[in-house]
Length: 114
Ligand code: HEC
Image 1: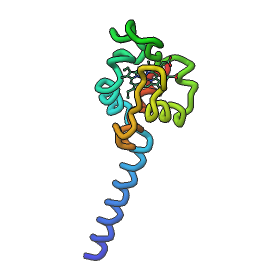
Image 2 (image 1 turned 60 degrees about the vertical axis):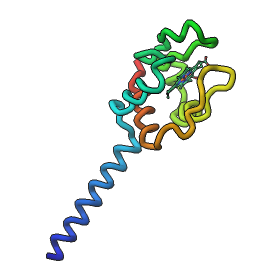
Image 3 (image 1 turned 90 degrees about the vertical axis):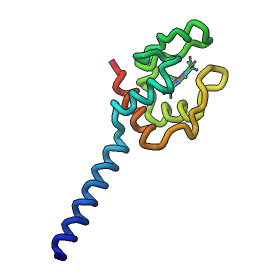
Image 4 (image 1 turned 180 degrees about the vertical axis):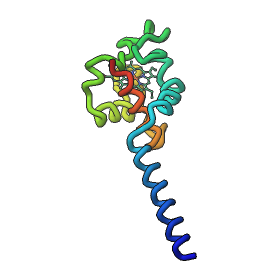
């Protein structure tokens, strides 16, 4: 009986650890859903800044697949997403996402790298 419950604890810990690892790494598929809901209206369906809105925005939304964007660190991109870019249409998404959702979104943004 004791061995069984010990085994159960070990299994549960293993699952918790796997989940944590997955969430800190981010899931690009889940991130894509978030992107389509929150970002594509400006950055376009494939992140290239090719939305219908783009024609009306100055500066236009960034091409997120571009080298200039992909060269930024995760911390820099996170900061832009959370704080927005003053003087542009890029608003602050502070409080909009759970940490795990932000990690998923980042994983999706990195998947745009050509
Ligand atoms: C209302 C339009 C709009 C929405 C919605 C929007 N953005 Fe932006 N985004 C912009 C504009 C405009 C810029 C600024 C481009 C510039 O500075 O030249 C920008 C810039 C950025 C940049 C900086 C790129 C760089 O290389 O500096 C990132 C990263 C970014 N957006 C990510 C996102 C993400 C992720 C979302 C969704 C959570 C999102 N944006 C939603 C309009 C938008």
